[in-house]
Image 1 (cartoon, helix red, strand yellow):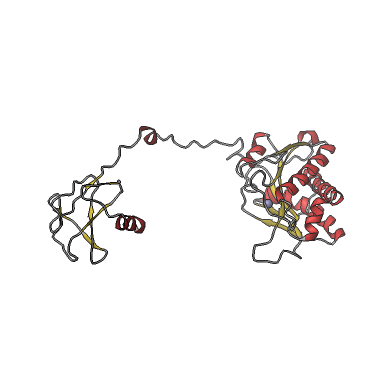
Image 2 (image 1 turned 135 degrees about the vertical axis):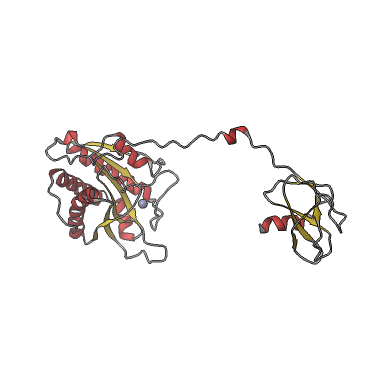
Length: 305
Ligand SMILES: [Zn+2]
């Protein structure tokens, strides 16, 4: 409301000027402050005082403002423009049902050949969405993709069927990522990220891995990969923060076991270096693949570590 009043106050309308359509139209007339006997088209209208020199009168759009007692000013208020036909015919939003949505969770693949187990690997961020930045401005999206490719290569070597949500620097919608798992009849979905602390925290000595899952089937997968990553980290002096529950777009998948791995902090100097180190990367990728082996065999830890 305030900007409209200001606009009209600054650009004082000329008598007879057509005012642009607004839901509530205000007329500024040079009536005496305190005047209450103002008629618009013969009807009394409410008066709003904005200062000693002007009074605002509320009128309905489409009203021809006449009979403003005590004032020589009168204005024609523009009529509401006819609604455009295409705006009126706005199509109803159609929601697409994902293949498993609302159905039972996917059956655990115990006993199946690896070639019949599909794992979707999701490299977090991409395109304009860089994710976190390292001290030397390495973008998280690139570190995620390097790690995701290593995990894919390791899983393929072991005979799994692997699908990537992106295999290049490309934007993929957050909600399109779990859809890739649905579209490929996936047995598991793993999102790869690198972490960053909150903006008000010192990033220099903060470094650990953590795994997030949303429901029980996701946590089971998360426990499996976390145990293996924790073992690699322990050997290298990197902390592990275990498995937590988190309601993320990529973990919130009721039917397909899904988890998100923050493999390291890209914001600490050591974490940044690790994201470039191919030896460390292959070790972590092998740990994630070992975790998937454990999960597929049903030998993951029974409780969160
Ligand atoms: Zn991220």
